[in-house]
Image (cartoon, rainbow, N blue to C red; front, side, top):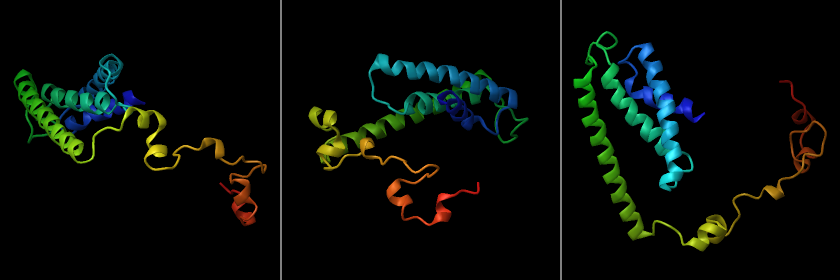
Length: 171
């Protein structure tokens, strides 16, 4: 699914500026390149459970660059024609945006760290923030009631008090 999302992320900057064929090329390249970027996560050791950087960061950057290569005034007369010159302009814009986002993130991290701390201690992280800080358990899967009424989508405690029509489905 990440490859599909990567293709959509990469085509977003280019939509309205490139041909359908170029859109397919951009999507395919994004799927491959973003997959490789996600694999780098374990090698570089950064924490990104949702692969946001590998899919959205890399995919968006790639899409911005490839827009410069494939854009055409045939598809958007207000745009530009693609090529190496436009690719260079897109690279300057994409790199400037990445730098701005990185610096803004660093500033926010420093402020949060000074105000409340950016990370919890190791014990709290291992034991779980829900339990240690909030005093409750976030995932209590062992306490999920069994569905012991045949055909009932409701837990037994609710199914016993639910109207009969709620237990049957016409869909």
